[in-house]
Every structure is written in C-alpha cells, then in structure tokens.
Length: 314
Image (tube, rainbow, N blue to C red; front, side):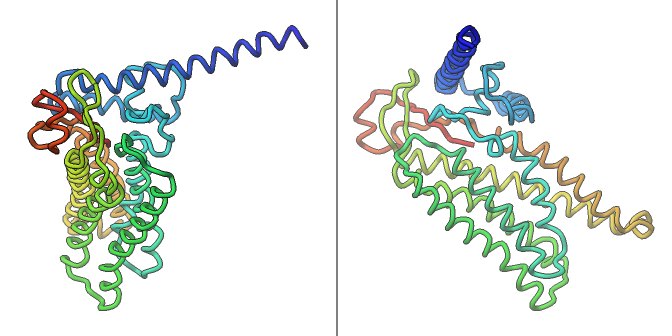
C-alpha cells in the first residue's frame, strides 16, 4: 500500500501542476492579444470557426493551449469557463430555443418555456463571458441576472399575448414582429446583464499589457459592440428561416407533406446560426481598442499612449 501511495501522490501533484501551468499560460495568451496586431474580419472569422469546435466544451487540461485557451479560459479572471457557457456551446443550446420561440402560437402556455429557457441561457452566457476585470460580487450578478431574465421574458411574451388575445393572424403580427422583438431583446439582454461594466468601468491597457485604469466609457463601448453583434446574430437567424418558410408553404411538396415545414425550419435555423455565430463573434475584435482622447481625464493624464486596449468580452 505504501509503495502505491508514492505514484498516486506524484500523479496528483503533476496533475495540479499541469492545470496551474495551463491557467497561467492561458492568461498570458489571452493578455497577449492586446500586443498582437488587430486582425481583419476574415482572420477573426477563421479563428472563431476553430474556437467554436464542440470539443472545446470538454477540454480542461493542457491540449493545444494556444487555440483552446481563447475559448475555454476567461481572459480577465484566468478561470475555466463552465462548459455549457463556453462560446462553442452557444449554437447547440440556443438554436433549438430560437426555433421553438418562432413557432406559431397555439396557447400562451406553449410559449412560456421556450422564452424563459432562451433568455435565462442568454443572460447567464452574457454575464459569464462579459468583462470581469472590475469588482463584482456574486450576489450582484445573481440579482442583475434574475431581473434581466424576468424582464426579457415578459417583453418576449407580451406580443404573443396580444396575438392570442386579439386573434391576430396577419404576416406582420405572426412572422415579422416576433423576429424584430427577438433581435432587439437579444441586444437589450446584453446591455442589461452587463450593466455594471459601464457603471464601474473596465480595465484599459497599453500596448505592453500594463493596466492604466478603469474606464466607464470603454465599458460602454464594449457592451454596445457586443449587443450589436447579438442583434445581428439572432435577428438574422430568426429572419431567414421565416423567409424560407413563407415561400415553402406555396410549394406542392408542402401541400403533400405539411410536417416537412418544421423539419425545414429547424434545419434552416441550425444552418443559419452555424454561419452567423462565428460571423457575429468576428464583427468586433475581442481585444478592442479605443483612443485615449475618448476616455476619462484621469486616464488621459496617467499615460502618454494615444491608443489603449480592453477586453470586449463575447
């Protein structure tokens, strides 16, 4: 027994050391993004197609750390992001929710679960992947998240309630308005769930990675850019399947097989989101830059740099 304890203890020590090295190396990699030249949209898109690999949901030890750390480790806290809320999990979790949210309304009860599920997941995803460089207590995140989930769900269900109450069945009320509301609420969900960033400010760094201070204006820009990318993501992912469905209903195949509409709509939603997730993540670089002249006076007086960097979040 004593002879076996030695190798077991050694393996535990080595595992702990490897994990520590991985987190430290990952933090260095993520921070080095501020030092590297900013990439074009195409380069960011190709990088995100690799980072959204579903295997990133389960990787937690040193494996291709250069690629994996960007999608599994938070760049501010250097902590592992929970698997269900890593960027690679956004598509498999939200695509079915978007599909169910856009189904025709039969009763209000049938719409509650998809709406609650979608906005709950979106809120937690935004909080987990937002900027974490400012002081934030756990209970604050819980209170903010609960309020955002409740309000987002209410505003998501409200037009559906009107549709059921007044028996609205026009193309505008049945297809167009739900898409617009889903897109706008997705953007507002980001703004609300990350509302502490513009209030308290986020870290801004120079080109060497040294922290200059905390900027509320940089926090506002980070949240605004991320909210814009969410509007593009979910607005497009909901709109294109509706367009395909509109024309598909006029085909002879639909008249023979009405059930095929839902298979088409689900497949189209997954395919469009599969393309739009890396596109939306690539619209703005994760390491954003901002002119020092646009920041607070105390930050301008603390550095001679003309351009500073910050973590936008995902």
